[in-house]
Image 1: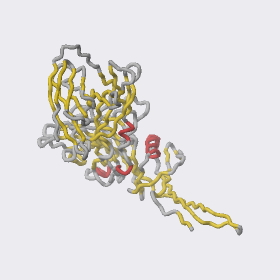
Image 2 (image 1 turned 45 degrees about the vertical axis):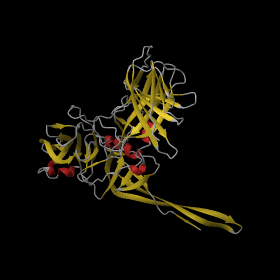
Image 3 (image 1 turned 90 degrees about the horizontal axis):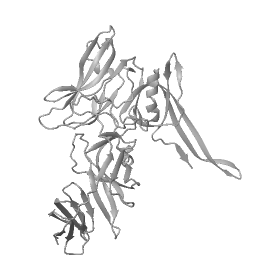
Length: 474
């Protein structure tokens, strides 16, 4: 039957009674924002002010019952506050395959006290500043000891990286002008505090910090980089977001070659009064040296899907409607943001040089280290090798084959690349996800060679089918 919490206040100590021996979990909410969670019914050293307590009992049939009561403390005994500080926390957007450090410190730390961080993940993929925490689920609780100074450091990157699973990754459709990749980032927040155990070895948790919602990006930045954040956009703050690509500036792009630029965009406001549209713009340069700024390429709506990681295809052929398209030698692509109040440029630009088309190209799409996708056209020239290996058993009359296995590998050749383009393709060599003409392939362990001529380079990529029927057995 329902229970009621009876509250007895003695100076700065509160004792709670439920009228039965049923095990009850208490969560005390202090006016200071501190939250204490324990099974013991006695809370001590409470500050002055209005507080509240919630009790939860789990019944034999698996259901729970709760009661909520409020009370006031005006004690005369000395109150000893606990000073808890968050020394370091991850940024608003951070690469998940680099350290994401939470550093905590407690003033009255005693050897044996523990620090904990609870990582909570959100189900949606709407990237808003000051995003609500509704419907979040507890992903993992991390617990560590403190050091002699009362400080502890917890790395939450491993727990968040487990959420980026191969079967859930989004494979871009290179035909689309723009799309959203919701598999590239995870919204989360964390709760932090101290933990100890009572005389019956039951946990006593004190929640001392509640973070805002932040985002972990499927990316790994340079190890010698002191700041593991990637730029992102606050609306109208004047700081443009960089594209999540390793393609160097002035790289040559063939007219029909997909050119994916990924942008992580955060929205500050949302609602019926905001249009929230992004315009893909380009500054053009022609053969005679003349140029044109602010040429409209296409547009897409941000409001219907919310902020997030957007992929924009900026291949030269997207500019074909320009009357001087045949004279185009280079162009710079960027995004403008528009709502019902003003228009502002919200991304930095990326410049490309228009090259010659590859005859019968093979489209190679791969994941880069910044969490986005890049593409390159290889020549269809290729070599296919099929190697067989026999398994034999020996009898008194000779050797017999009882199984034959085969492996198939196909080698594709690139066109001529500049030094910077070749360096960029290290991301292709390291990518765990490579697609050729939209089909997943396994890259083979190999040694990549420089084949140079007049300062230009070419490379080979050797792959195997994702699955093949490669064995016959007696």
